[in-house]
Length: 289
Image (cartoon, rainbow, N blue to C red; front, side):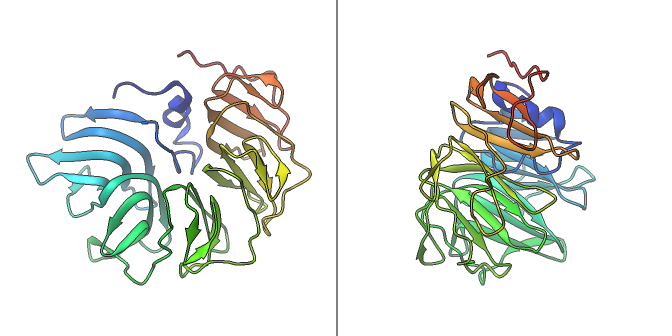
């Protein structure tokens, strides 16, 4: 692999330990193409995640060619036995987030389309193939940048969209398991949400470009209660775009992005927070350009 971004290096390092860390990567490339001898990926890979069956899912702005087969586009699956599934692909410009669900179901979000469904697409496995679920139609009005699943099966969606499920809802929304809008979720960021993570206690971490949520100032980092209300027990900020979040088993929070300072402490590109949002000063957090 080549040209790994400094602010995304953590994704490659910690993926085996921290599930969900690679989800919801936005425009910068995780990798600008690679060739492992079996698969030739040309273009940008934004996200890579394994499902419980050992499949590797890649999303981005790429084409995959395996032994001269028809290239896949934007989304692809590499099976656990290192066999490429050429039947999986999407049309459009990019996939930013891939979220495997229970029962051989996968969600893909981005600026993408297939089968009349746009920007947030559910694929269901039928035999050994994945087909678009045309009954699942949130159809966000704008790009999806992040996905996360709650323990109750509801789906959190972050992005640059200004509407979803036919209703006005900007940058962050929660969907019921059938793809309908959960109107009880009230969070209203004022700009893009690029990454999401759900803590074991159900509280929701959000990062992005926003500077307020529901009218309350919060600089690019926030924690929400399950209702969407801001969690007053969490206070964190970043002076640049937050691109990725992950929760450690002990409750610490790993943050990656385009920042130089987090919660008032100099941390370039990478920081570790306590569960309260305070930056851990003993975590180096410095990544070279």
